[in-house]
Length: 315
Image 1: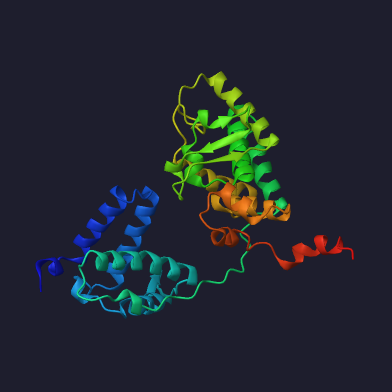
Image 2: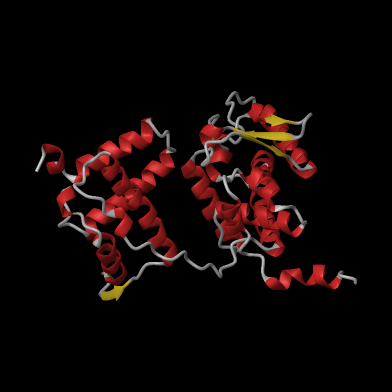
């Protein structure tokens, strides 16, 4: 066996991550998710140390173990199981690494074509927020920050940005003041912050313009110098991932609505679809590469939602 085939999977994975970071220019969050999946793989498959331990049934064995493993909660042993969507995520990330190994001749023979691909998960859950849920979240912001005008204007601006543009969390946090163009009514999304790596301009709603102007006016009163659009309420610095996590947790508790930032993205896509926007337009504004990805965001639209359109039909 050649020396390259004696390298540990850990060493090869580190080389793979370096390739993803510097050659493919993948986002830090994407890199982090690859590392988390690989750590889980090592934990579940401790006997898999080098490439010689890999075979075409390795993923089947991994999924079998992870689906039947037991965890100790308190004094009770439970079998946790894994959601189909999680299985699909593990598969996609691990298969990408294995194909990289094949491409760089670290494997004696190709194994990925013989690995069984898991079926696409079926989604029956409601991802989009209802109008009532949105109202509860906005009401919680109003009640919580009614005595602090800056905080109120900032948090309403955050909600408006999420509802009226459908941007991702990373894109929101990366926004700069200069990305907002009030004259052309556009919001610039820099490709460096986007999952698709594509820059795009999003038309912005009049209500969003109003909220952004109010927020920026309050910022001026604080004499802030930070160029990030969304800033901390305590310091003159950009709003952080940790701050956003706390923000979601706080308003989920106060509003009684269990939500995360991505639910606003689903809400935006579904609202556009219900306004008869064509799927290509929705795809472009959301920064998707294909309409197939966009369709996943429209799964909250149930057949009952078509009633109002059907009732208007005439022949």
